[in-house]
Length: 269
Ligand code: NAD
Image (cartoon, rainbow, N blue to C red; front, top):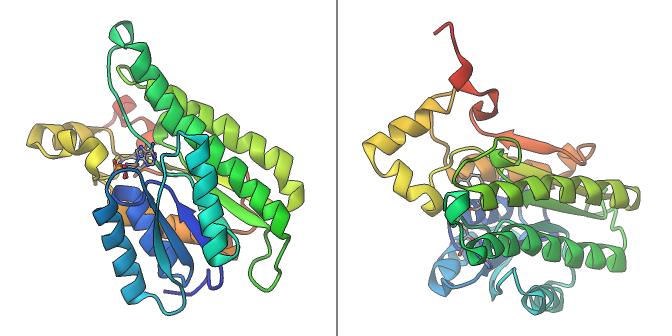
């Protein structure tokens, strides 16, 4: 731990598992206060918070419920965080899901649910974060930025994904959301970026990596020939939240072992 986030407070949505849990732990290891948000798994969220509290030298982790697709829940999440910690400095809208169907068989509900959580949920969180950043004003002793938003996107903000059009559309939408926020609020010293993970071993893709055939198919898509782990994203998130990356704004950082270099086009071995 470098304590790069001491005296800062971070909300990470959907952080009872997977990438969100790893990001919460990585930001906690930097000395930040952490809000572990969950929708359904309170116990798992408490385990994440307990681990952060055990290891942290300066911060505190708490657990807060909230469905990010509901405006009243997101408002309540921010209100409770501000009541407890005073403000919010870093927001990582990370909660996301997949409901896969070929497009011609996709029920409207499956389309709407994925857009509601993956895109609208991230909009609602970014909106509340910006409101709080501007209310609070800059604290130069804590960070050179007014606040930081780190959207959890995906390589599918760039790579089309047959059979997953709702998911790909949600992540493609995130790219323009993130860039539009940067364009509007960078003059206020707000930094807004995305992380685009490739194939990371979590519950969301367990059906693929848990079989030998699935793992082999996954590796064909990864030039680096290694499936990622949530900690690969945590370490990038903690750097992106810190002033070490201060001049990075309006960018997506791909953490994908080269997946966006389309290894299927390799012709010379
Ligand atoms: P995961 O299923 O472990 O995590 C998703 C979390 O979001 C879960 O804890 C879930 O409970 C939570 N969640 C779902 N709906 C919610 C809601 N309405 N409100 C609050 N929380 C909700 O999977 P993960 O891989 O850790 O996914 C995290 C993010 O990373 C997602 O946005 C996903 O799209 C993105 N991502 C993952 C991969 C990967 O390979 N694992 C690749 C690219 C992008």
